[in-house]
Image 1: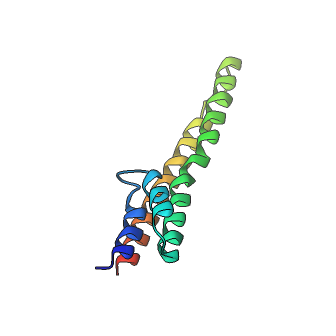
Image 2: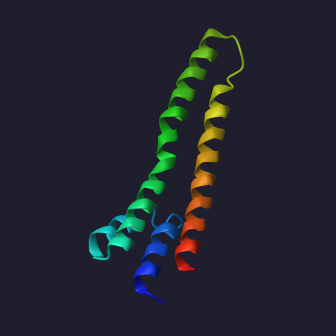
Length: 104
């Protein structure tokens, strides 16, 4: 098996064991442009779930305001947590798909 393909695939699979650190290391240590492209793509896809963090924080503050007023059910936090879990699940499935596709 080609080492560059294996490193490219491991960059995607690193979502399970090394987060975004492994693709960064591969990007800076490997000279092959195709492997660099896959490492960069894996790095960016590993960062995607972080866009939901501000939404969850906003949901917590919004719902604390709703609870302080005393009216309504704090539902916004459940929506934002569900949204962030959905994004995370999609990113994991996408990385597994891309990792397998690179290997084949």
